[in-house]
Amino acid sequence: MKVSRRFKENLIAYFFIGPNFIGFTTFIILPVILTLVVSFTEWQFTAGLKGMKFIGLKNYIDMWKDDWFISSIKNNLYYTLGTVPVTMVLALLSAVALNKYVFGKNIIRLMFFLPYISNIVVVSTVWFIMYADTGPITKLIEQLGVKNPPYWLADVKWAMPAIILMTVWMNLGYTMVIYLAGLQNIPNDLYEACEIDGANAIQKFRHITIPALSPTTFFILITSIINSFKVFGQINIMTQGGPGTSTTVLVYYIYQAAFKFWKIGYASAISWVLFIIIFTITLIQWKGQKKWVNYM
Amino acid sequence: MSVQAVYGTVKKTIIDKNFKVKRTVLRMIVTIVMFCLGIAIIIPFLWMISASFKRPLDVLKYPVEWIPKYWYPQNYIDIMSKQSYNFGLMYLNSIKITAINVTGSVLTSCLAGYAFARLKFKGRDHLFLLYLATMIIPPQVTMVPRFMLFDFLGIINTHWSLILPGIFTPFGVFMMRQFFMQIPFELSESARIDGAGEIKTWAQIIMPLAKTAIVTLVILTFCWHWNDYENPLIFLRDRKLLTIPVGLDLFKDEAFTDANLNLILAAATLSIMPIFIIFTAGQKYFIEGMAAGAVKG
Image 1: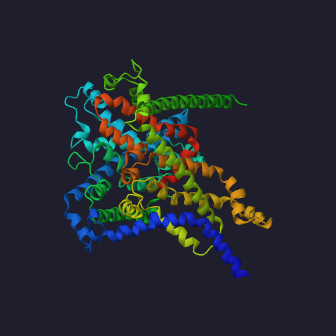
Image 2: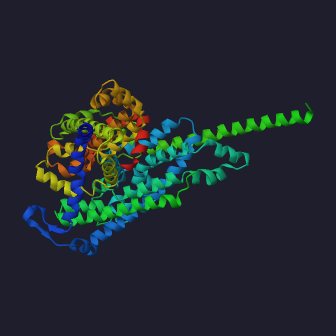
Image 3: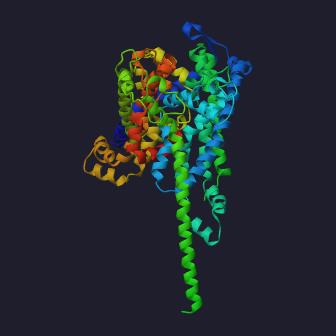
């Protein structure tokens, strides 16, 4: 009797899990395994299953001789270093200002947040037009007295900074909202105690806000770095990785290799490199949390 | 009370008052600065909306005409009705896919989240760990094999390639589980004593209590699916099947001349309106959900 009851319990639970689990294995677990398997093959997709040839680690070795791949890693690092620190500093300052020192917090928060919820295509298209050599940004810079303003997206040197600027603008509100959530968790008596000791605003910021926010900062740092390795939309829409290879980043290169050149095996191998990068960053988060974060 | 004490209190109130005045002034200054920054941030949108009502060649006029001299709402009519743009159809596609995916993924998440939170079964904790672990796998990593898989299943270039994977989200399961855990277990216990089965308990007792979490998940998934650019880009080929983001991207590439900028910007404005409306209506849920949903990014 008891056994059958447990059996029934399991059955009901599997009924609840079932639909999700089927999708989960088919569309997440299975593809992860497939990428790994295919990454050890050379496969011209257009030749069908017969075109698949096992070549061991060759893809993983060849990619380090591929200039395009190397520059996609370099560009990605450039993008990461360009977006993450600036966004975080601006977001922290705005969050502190918004948390205590403004009237009409919700309206301002809404304005900061709008770019983040907007569609990447809309955002990229609007900036694409604004960056054009006849667009308002270029015109404004000319008006400020700069002769020969850069051609932004058409210039090897300026394309990446232009994309970085747009991305900072887009992510600022989101990062600020996470900081705001963190700030609200700092108990007020900490500040009061400090005020009694005669601390000024800067001292309070330095000795209470920053240490108390360290878990939030750490979380934002890690997720922003991870997200910066997933960037794709703005690149594909605004520059298609160009001019030259100046804005080709990792995911964009995977996309190119897979769906433009149909080198499925090679693209899978690079996908795994991307996965390893992200996995390593996540591991650092796990280990580092205890060491660097100041839980109060 | 001695004179000195009185003097002391008076001085203290003056300082306090000064402090308060100073604080208010400081707050006003910071408000103005932040408000200006906020305006600066939404300027691209203001520019987009204003340009979407302009005649073609007024868009790039400099200095910018923030309020169009000649209003030209015809842009919106053109973009929605002209057959060659297909924009009306893309709008319908977006609505259809978003509606199915939101309903489906919220439902499967509520079911699975419930099982992980409140039912005992073999292998529960291991399975949940597996779900958690996969949340760090970026969808871009599995983009290539998903294409092979869909090709094998024969669903490339159909809406199924967006719907089938779209109705399962590990994040939703995780979120609903965390929420269901907080509901007192005595409730399920008493329902059981009253003779309710597990499904009845789920549907009639637990689900109604989870309204806030469900609303948050609905808003979040709506945003993801409405804005999804990468999946339709890879899995759809046929113009008639495209959703708004890829359609807009294609339209931008094909029609990009100065004479069409007004149309492109009208299309862009139309495509973010639903998100803006939902966001303004549910700002509270949205922001809390985003903070919690940071994992998905």
